[in-house]
Each structure stands twice: as C-alpha cells, then as structure tokens.
Image (tube, rainbow, N blue to C red; front, side, top):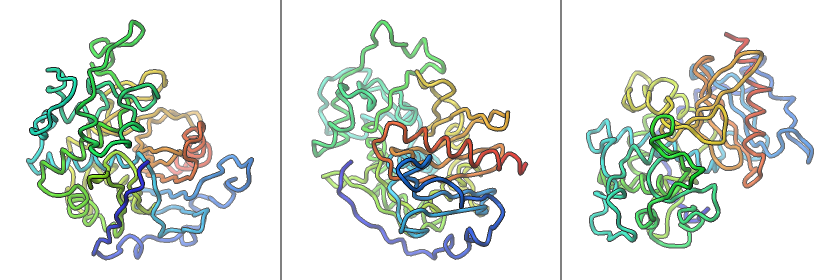
Length: 358
C-alpha cells in the first residue's frame, strides 16, 4: 500500500468518545477478557481490537494493543465501503447517478486500449466489482493488479488504460452468471470511483467525506492515504478508530439514517446490503455495493452478515437479525488465514452470544 498520508482533524465534538460506555460499564454483556489473542499459537493472535454494538449501544469493547480506543487503525479495503457510501450520498445529492459513465468524468484522458465497452462502464459496475476491465487483485498476473497501480502517478489513468478482459472457456461470462454480472475484485476501479465522486461533487473526496458523512456521525479524526498526485485513495488505507468504524456500520444497519437525519438514500443502502453479484469459488459468499455478504452458521442457525472488509482480517460486520455491528481490527496483514481467523472469532465467540440475546 502507498505511504502518502495526510491527517484530517475534524472540528466537531467527540460525541462518540464522550457518550459511548466503556467495556467496564457494560460488564456482563459479552465477555472479551478470555479471548486467546496473546502468543504465537493464539487462536486470534494479531487482533488489536474487538467492539460489539447492539442498536447503537456498545455491549463490549476491548483493545489488545497500546493504542486503545483513540487509535486510528488501518483497515485497508474497508475503505471501499466508505467510498461506496460517498457515491450513494452523491447520488442522493443529485450530482451522480448509478448509470453515470465513468469515462465521461475524464474527458481529457486518451485511454490506451480503446474499446466501446470501456466507454460504457458505469458507477454501478464499479461498486459491484463487475466492470469489463482486465483487473483482478487476486491474480498476480492481472494487468490491473493493484500493486502495478502503485508504481505510477495517475491511478485513475491506470484503470482507464486497462484492456477489456477476456473469458477463458472455464470462466463464467456475465450473461451466464447469477445477477448477470461477473465478479472481479479490482482496487483500481474503486480508486477511480473515488475520483469520479470527487469530480461529480466539485470538492476533494476527503472534504466531501468530512462534511457529508464523518461530521454528521460525530467522527472526529480520519487519516486518508493519497496518490502521488494527491487523490484520496478510495480503495484502501483510510484510518479510523474502532468506534468510528462502528458508527459507519450502524449507519448502514439503520438504513442510512443517523439521529433522525437521512445521510444516504434508503434505496442505495438497500442495494448496498443485498446481493448484486456472485463471488465464484467462495460458497455462501456474494457481493453488494462494495460490501461482502457471507453466510455464517452458529448454534444451529444460519445468518447472512454484511461486511466491510480489509486485508489482515479487518472487518466491520453488520448482522441485521441481531441488530448488531461488530468491529474487529488486526495487524495480520498479508497472512493467508487472516480473514478466516477474524471470521472464526465472530462466528464462534461473538455470534452465539448475540443470537442468545434475541
């Protein structure tokens, strides 16, 4: 990930820090004291924080590093969901549309590999990870792999220049896929979406996030990663506290409404949290608008979680049945089992207790 960063001090009251009860004040709700996180063989080693909320109230929280509740935590690709929320706000403001064509926001860019299908790529294609660009972060040979993007200055230009992807005989084409879309995880596309939002609203992405999302939620601090040309990285690297991440999850759980005020259009949130594209090779996993939808089994019951998710197993897990939001942050970056570790922590240690509360 890039290291270009700029801290943003948001001049609003620290409402969350002042009003949210501590773990000690919520004694007996959910016990986090016995979680095995210390030591090389710990089941959940590398976990830095766990926070569990129910209907906006903190049931339990614990920090396993020196940062504590005030630390800004790099949750990597969980940033993508924030960018999706900002796109929805721009749609609600009448400044962007789901069918807005991405190329139209870059009229001066003469893209390599010109193709009419590239000209037709829309906002909805990017938020569902299903554009026609040859871009796959899970494939090290992909022309659009995000690590290649970080080697050049112009990150949206990198995406716009990508060729159209082909479908090998063993690959499922969009027309043969559930929901009519073919999933391909592409950070460069979401980075470009951030630039589209910025151009549509006429202000830097970080300023739009501050005024239209963070300030209304009482989020005091945020730190973005930036491209070499100064574009806030909508595809990853945004640092927020665990409590701030919980507020974002709660906003989605509440349908885009906070404190009686609508921040994100209801239909955008509904589409964010419903299946839009199937994720091949991962049973029980689908994708909404930059949100992962995963089937989870606990105490003999099946639920579907909606998650902001980033490298290392960093997660904001929204579970509508229990009206809960769970934040798990870690430093397990690059580990093959990092996501599985955080998912086990939720499914085995937290979800059963949440289901028993119902």
